[in-house]
Length: 221
Length: 419
Image (cartoon, rainbow over all chains, first blue to last red; front, side):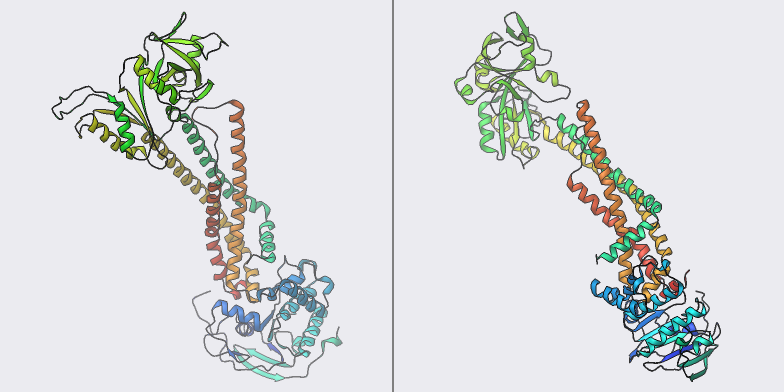
């Protein structure tokens, strides 16, 4: 946290429609993670505006930001970020817990989402007992559990081998097919090709923003 | 606030590193143990000293006459005078809130000549002329027969109650005492009872060698007229004799024609004042116990705070995840505070329990080996335990406060980056 300021994003203007599956690409240092963090309300913007589902996101205190994150956003991280002393089901139920959903309903919902990612039988397992792909699927189930407006994935396949990556992408595509808006940060072209739109960032500006024909991941699985 | 998930998490965090948790808990355990034992020891000393005061009514002042030191109403200074029975009635009439006013006359005394004879045995004893009330001010247990009653007073019966010490010097072992006669300075008295005093301080031996006879019979037999040697005056519970004694003295000065400013004419011993002085000493001891105990506890609390800081540091990433998932910062703060309070209370309760065990063992040893001078029945009351619990909760909150702040000060993005 140096005192020197560094402009990472230098004038980015783009909007995402409901139901889109957008890949944000760029080499490291291009500002793609910063963009995602701002979209995820984990980081704050210095200038400009950000509107999510018609709600201007600005001047948030931590409590408010936490509420918005919980209600609007689902996160999927490269390193899965599961809480390692909680079982798969408890991990998935976590966002619902913060919404103060009752215990029973929480568990039912968590099981439902685990079922969707095909891990119902693994509900009672700890993250340490799951493979990388399974962990990421639990993380996706967790991101979906709160039924967010947008799913933000930061290199979701970065720590996975290609077969597992395609499995995860297959899952993400299915979730998108169900009408969910998803943003994926990636530097792998094959992963980006499985999205419906690619945004290229370079040195903090958008150099390319194109709609593409989606490559279905299911053909590789 | 206190649901199952929170408890699971608290237990999870505290059991991940047992050794560390136990070491941390030991600091608090030790602090509260010291506090409890110090308080119990203070209480033991207090009980011991209170027992030394015996069951003597402590709200009592003893007064006797000396010589006047000022001229008054034409009477010279240096005049000797005696209290009279009418003073007793006047005190009873004019001073409120008094429980007992017992006049007393006395024969014999320390190192006195032999004054009591029975057959061929003789002895030197204190002989008191008393009213029945005195048994409430200077309690004794009647071991056989009875104490003086009002009929004895009214009919001036020549009866006597003797101490166990008197009995052993004037009687054979196992001899029947009640109904026999003893001769006190040439006057025969019927023995109607024996007593034993429970005090265990220096004059325990002396206290068993006294003879009580009715005040009126004493006055008649030994030519005291209506003179009163001294008085034992006890105030009612709830009012202090130290405040009432001046009124009593005023009444007596008025009656005996003593100058109102003559402070030396009436001698007195204020048991309550002495007792209060000792009681305030107990208060000071309690403060010292709290002071030392809390300081020791404080170092334990700092240990807890330290460990909680480390726990927060270790869990930075987890906290970041949880905040990314939308957990309220207050909820995180609460979690850390609860972990800290929980750890403090658990270890504190262990300290209290262990302290109780130590106290129990001390009591057990004391019971087994008989009483010890100035120390009896160390204990802590439920109130003290509740205070200790309150101290624990407050210190747990204090210990958790800084770590909880540091937990939410980290921005979620930085917490997520932590590895």
